[in-house]
Image: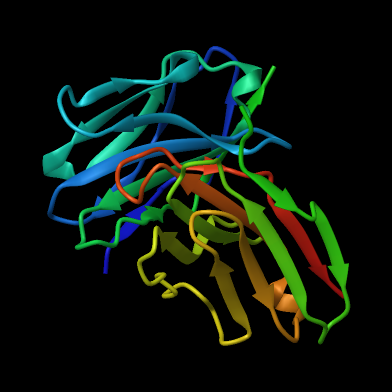
Length: 115
Length: 114
């Protein structure tokens, strides 16, 4: 069965530290990859996505992610975090499985940034 | 423009009662999803509607859960004979189609079963 694994469940950083959140998926075919973010008290919203082309994608608020097909990974990075990045981060994969194109979600990573 | 809306925002019910949750997707979005998010956990897929196709119900945890959608409009998620383990935030999302497009999420309904 297809699955998405986020290795870090809870991450605590100080402001200006660098961030990398891991995401691996299990599916050998064509995939579309997403990172969603949920700030405290807010809706889930799209942070960035990869469909094709340049495997290094840039999203909002200085985030980027790199798709490494050989490693089945789509790690999220930010060179210098801010207190306002405190949120829950979810990796999701849309696998081309017939007509069923629902997203498969990781369990999420809770990021706390200390000022 | 209007986003995905859900009602009620909060629902407290007694064990054994039925509840109905509502989702209004973004106009024109053919795909609609229901998820459950328990405290401290990730999103759990429940059901997926795509246009007039038969819904994908593979995520519904038991036969107490059902959902309907009329055309490409409102959807209702019904939980019969609620149990305490049903307590969670129920999220609805819609997208332009069931493919590669971004899912837009509603604010969720927080269900508490006493």
